[in-house]
Length: 102
Image 1 (cartoon, one colour):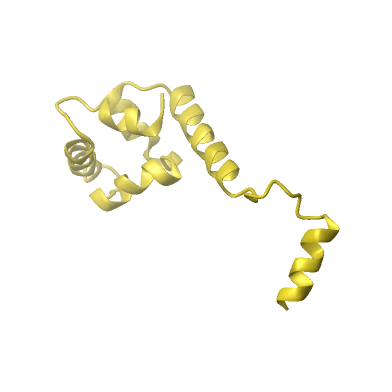
Image 2: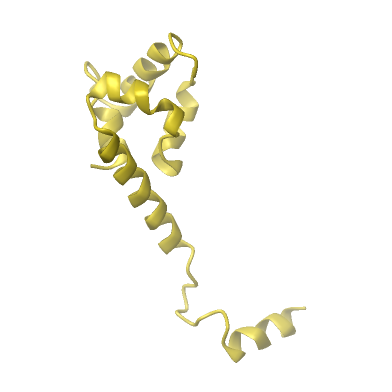
C-alpha cells in the first residue's frame, strides 16, 4: 500500500482532494491540525508520525502499513537522487569534472 492509497482509503472520499478535505476537517478535532496543502505533500514526503493516529482512526490502516509506505517512499526518493550517469561520485572522472567546474 502506498501513501496515496492510504489517503484514498478515507471513507466517503472518491479522490485525493476529497480525502484531503476530510482529513483536514477531522484533524481540527485533534492536537495536530493539518491543512489540505500539507496533506497533498504527504504523497511526496510521507505521513508525519504525529498524524498516524488520525489516519489509523479514519482509515483503519495499520501502523505497519503506514510505516512501510513511508519507508517505500523514502527509498524511492533516494533512488531518484543517484547520479544519472552511473559513475560513482568518487571516481577520478568525477573529481576532475568538479575541478574543471571550479
